Length: 429
Image (cartoon, rainbow, N blue to C red):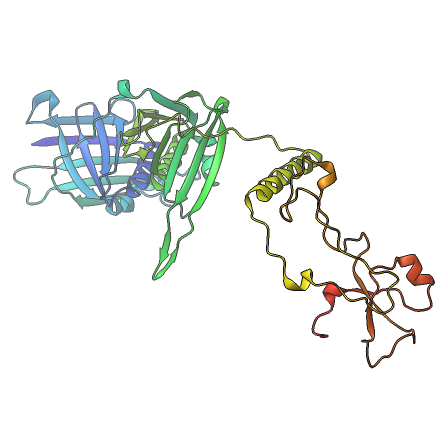
């Protein structure tokens, strides 16, 4: 036989509601363990990768607390399990209402009906409201054996601490569909919280490109930060958000303890008689030094960027010239060019420089630089030939005046100033 009776103030009942909201994000069922000096809510998710234990101090949290067990003496305990939604229907959000509106209570009385002569076991909750109104809820529970996750903090040499309100500002940048959270300590005095997902699936459609959001936090913003540089540890982003959201309601610091990837990580926080511990499964990289986050490079100025880009192009150009074989010269280029009517002079290809074995030559000799055939600083243009010095039936009406300078063309009566490049004329031949 077990005797369990305790009374909650409106503020304490509202905190129980916040606890149930947090545990409902981990599991559909909530386990209860009552002992002589404490009352504990526990939850284990379906994949058994996250365990939550929220303990209420019997002397500090409750207005009155009484527990007696006929089995086990002073070390005896009472354990049971109930649906989280059933408890949430009793402990509503507006239990603590300073305006004293409908739903506000004066106190909450909880007891356990566990007697051999009783036909059913009940978890009884009485809400004593204003003007003598009492709301009684009788919930059915199931007797279970509650297991606890063990965590050795002495082996967890990596740890950090930050106020929950500050951490909440950072997690607001996380994507709503990101599934994993990677926590890494960089070598530049920053801690990086990166959320990502491998793929998104909606029916038959799969988004193969991963979505990620990285938030860099200066280690000086932490209350305590002792983590091996470059160590990556990965946890569930959804669990982390739920933990931070509940820690904000208690207005306390969030502390993390872990040793290495694939070993458990524990978040701990508490205040005013409430102690919360979440033990999560982790993954990540073992080698911290090999996977250290590189320090961000300083953004160069525009002049420095152009100089660096030009130097890179020169290096790549030299490597291409030394590795790429010379192209085969087309037959059209090998044949001598005809003299175009109306041109002032006829150009001839320059002979190859001595010692040259192809189009690409070494740039060590300043006199051995290669220039393309018919190279001229003037742009290749196309103009109208209005002169009557040739037969229109034998020659086309267009002529190539690339050998003429712009001044000579403008002053000459034989041609009009060029208006278009040859490369822009398509489909005329």
